[in-house]
Image 1 (cartoon, rainbow, N blue to C red):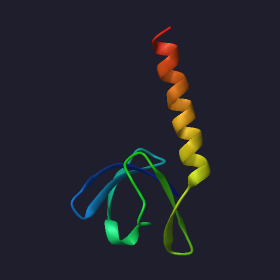
Image 2: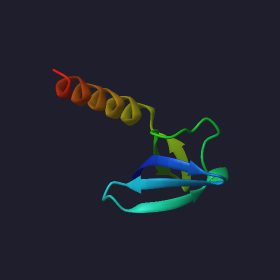
Image 3: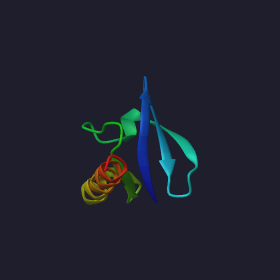
Image 4: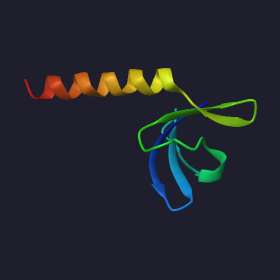
Length: 70
């Protein structure tokens, strides 16, 4: 399951799963360099940053924004 970091509130990361459901994850369970907008996935009971999906998502959003302003 993948999650997108929606926002960080204190020690909690509010994340959206692939079905649009919002969940809260303790920030201590996440990689140290995580930030809003990053994508994470659960691998072997551990959350890891999904670098490839994060970049794909950013590029897709960038293209959508460019199309809106044309």
